[in-house]
Length: 128
Image 1 (tube, rainbow, N blue to C red):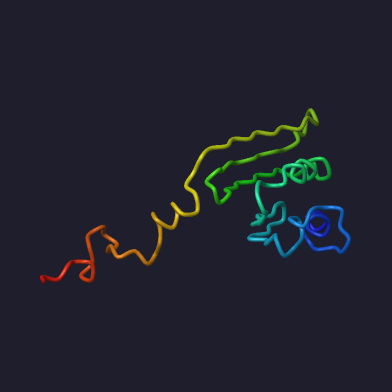
Image 2 (cartoon, rainbow, N blue to C red):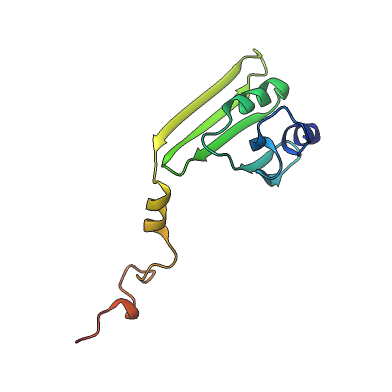
């Protein structure tokens, strides 16, 4: 695990990888003895070439990438190497999700409605 983190996630000047793999774009959320959970920020879609390369370099890893871009396109990419056959298995699924503006509309914390869905006192009109 230490080798994967040092070689693939931590920043190294003049790295051959895209800037998305450097530490200012990748945050380790949780680390265990046999796995890591990272949050990665990229400009558009995930770096599928890099994810695929992780399987080649670290065949003992199981990689799952859940992603969403601001326009609403979302997906999940899962890859692993079968221990018996050595065959790379990759599954990918994409769908249209909420775009950034829709998320703000549906889930903004500054909404005038009360938590139970009923209007708050401030949102009820005053007689004129």
